[in-house]
Picture 1 (cartoon, helix red, strand yellow):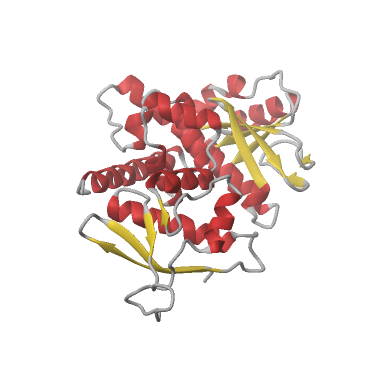
Picture 2 (cartoon, rainbow, N blue to C red; picture 1 turned 120 degrees about the vertical axis):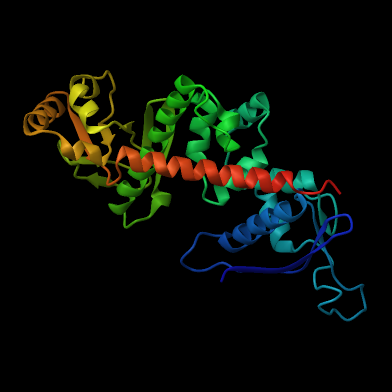
Length: 330
C-alpha cells in the first residue's frame, strides 16, 4: 500500500473532511507515485460524494491532543503541497483545497494538452468528469483526445448517450472508436517487447486514422506479416489501426496496404477477423506488405469484440452521468 487516508462527508453542506493522509513511495515505482495516487483518489472520492473537489483537512488545535474525532491533519499535508508545486499549483488556504484548486490539480495529473483543454471549452464538456472516467478506466486519455478531435458527437459519447437514432453519425463515431481501442491494444502488445512496461510506450493521433508511436528504449518487434522492426528511442513508428469484418479486409487489401508517403516505418494493426482471410488473399497481403514496406500486426480481438467493449464503456459513462445528476446541490 502506497497511500491511505481517513475521510468523512458531512451531510450538512456536503463537506468532505480528511482527518489523516499518508503516502509513501515504493522503490519499484516512480517518484511521488504514493502522493500522486493518494491525492488523485482522494479528490475523486470527494467529487463522487459531494460533486466538488473541495477538501478540508481537520486536526486538533495547537496544544490539544489529536484524536480520531479531531483529526490529525490541521493543515494541508506537506507532501501534497510539494507535489502540487510540481504542477505550478499553490493552495491559497492553510487547511483547505478549494474546488477550483482541486479541479486544476486533477486535470494536471490526467495530462490533458492545452489543445484538448480548449476543445473541452468549445464543446462545453466538463473536463473533470471526463478525467474521472479516465482514472476509473472507462476510457484512456488518448481515446478521449481522439473523441474530442475527430468524433461527430463527443458530448454524447463521453456522457454515454450515443444511440443509433442517426445511423450515419453513429457508424462514423463507432468506426473512430474502434481505431481508438485498436491503438490501445497495439500499445499493450508493443509493451510486451519491453518487459510489459507501458510507460515506455506513448502515442498521439496525428489524424483520425493515424497514430505516431514513440519509445523510451530500443524497441524490436516481429509482426504477423512483414519484416522485423527496430525503433530507436524517440524515433517515430507510424501505426494505422484498421478494424473491419474479414470479408472487408479481403475487398480492401489494395487500399489498406497501398504505398504511403510516410518516411517512418509503418505498421497496420488489424483485428482477429484478418485471420479468416482466404489463402489467395493472404498471399496478396504478404505481397503488398513486402512491396510497400508495411508490417501487419494482428490483435486477438474481433471487430465485434471491440464493439462490445465500446458499448460497455458507453454504459459506464452513462451510469456515472446519472450518479452525478443525483447529487444534491447542497
